[in-house]
Image 1 (cartoon, protein in one colour):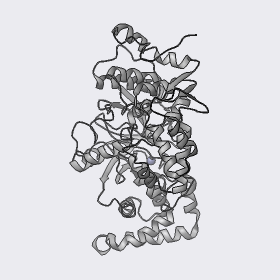
Image 2 (cartoon, helix red, strand yellow; image 1 turned 60 degrees about the vertical axis):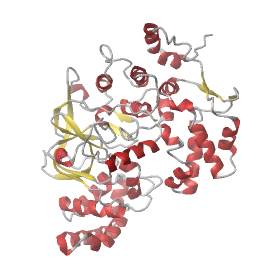
Image 3 (cartoon, protein in one colour; image 1 turned 45 degrees about the horizontal axis):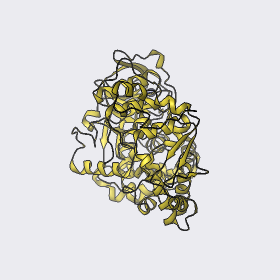
Image 4 (cartoon, protein in one colour; image 1 turned 90 degrees about the vertical axis):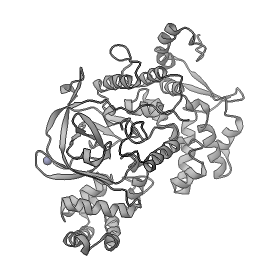
Length: 500
Ligand SMILES: [Zn+2]
């Protein structure tokens, strides 16, 4: 029997040997009979609080106690956990703890979720847990699902590692290569981090992992370069959000593992430059960002009257746009609204009234009550478990739904289909100001799915080879299936942002 003792088994003082060993670590962990994880700062009491805490406070202290373990804070340990077949746990008393699966991940998640159901409010629970100062289960990132999968897409791998610590950029990239599909890149990995990111991203794309296209760029808010987002309010907001997300770099990806395979992959080119065959959604003829009203019912009102300008008082078009593409209701929930004759008639009445009274004769204050009625008729103001498990669709936009769209729930585009010449409205995350998003082309990543959904709703906005935005809920609005080859520069991938 051989024992691998991390750190000591890697001779830190002999660089060439160290490099060779490091590239073999992922295999060592994958082939190991078991991996013993030493949680040197977790004692018996923390485990007791987690498993048998008498009050909600106690149980949450148990949860954050485990999640705060130093072991979770490192790049290498994440790679090792994902690759390990059989991890076991030893605590600070050098005692091997029984009945632990996935380094307590399922236990902390179970306790967290049942407390969430009991309290009914995620923000209250997060404040009780002192999230930001403490780590809560979702702050650890999608570790369990990645552990089960053993390899993850580039976007997920980056968000898992970006905020964790390691000795150098080259260690970071080795750990990244340890969990993505391609084990190595063509040629030698560059010592320039931006170039190394691109090399690994292209290798992933080549294998059908298109997640690099969907990442928020390094010059996006929170990045180093200044964009229009870099007003102090936005920057502080982004920094605050990032701090609250712990080890999950939620700003750069946050889509969760991708499924499916890109439909036109075989006709795409990857070297020397990226030239991908993609499905055309349309030409972006309208781009808007509106955060003047962050209170969700107000934001809904602004969004609804904007959509009305494009759909006209056509109830089916309006409800499908708002329901599926802007608020991510599932098809069944949208069709249920449309087949309810009474709801349909009342929506029809409100849309006609709004459409015929424009400008100053009917301002937002006057529209507000009918706006709330409208949101209720479409079912956005209450929990519909088929679409969102714990909160209403409107509240979801104030949480993860907003994060998915660049932490901005008020970004919309309209794109004109080149086939049927109809214009449809989509929610988008902007990487550039609306003036630069305007005039871009919207493309769908056909075949690529996310979050267990069966419709292909992921896309990107491209202008002059640069990705200027992403689409997450852009399900098909018409039957057209035009495609074209698109040159993409991919020069603006995010850079890692270790915590502290
Ligand atoms: Zn069309």
